Length: 306
Image (cartoon, rainbow, N blue to C red; front, side, top):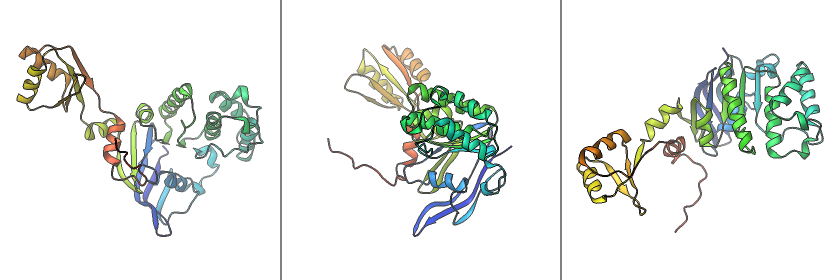
């Protein structure tokens, strides 16, 4: 089993500490979402794992070895860090064929990954004619070329259309189901919730969370219930008597925080309060993430006055 292990990892650029004594592991058989505000140190950490920089202190290993110590690394680790890495004057096929030849990977893998990423029909076109989404697919094809056990993908859904987003979600789940180690950096919270099993979240280079997705959401954001009734006065009195945190919107819809739909439905039925609507408001990854990282963003927009 091949895991990514980061131990007390620190990276400084002059007086700025981009990664600050970071420790976490990425295990096989699941998709780990790698989250954090801009400037949190995600890209720096991924580059250190891939041997593209030297840490100030600490270690980053893959299967117990640094990336630079791996034999035939493209067969062990696939990575997408920059969708623009392929030379624009080359065709997609030529780009992948050169990678395969230089890493002793059979040419048959080039055709396989072009098919898998949907690029086979345009493999003979020059990369400079590709859209951003097509370049993303080419970068993913390069990451898959060596059929590696470990994948590190930085914003793989960037530039993809809705069909492409569904495709990458399915691909990530399949790779994890195959027992591979998958680390995915993303700013798309809804998408991360759809494909990730586990989260590693950074803030200003430090570890903020290392937890399963569902546990993280439920620990930070309590679900709520939406209610509409024909008797707002009776409902308001009922909720107040039972100590519920509730508010009524201008359109007449009540929001009851930190409550369960079944409990409120039973309470209203017993009190004879008429129910026009009763809906669960599930907690989201975005809410939980923003709650955790509100004080950790390096760059934030100034709030606009109404």
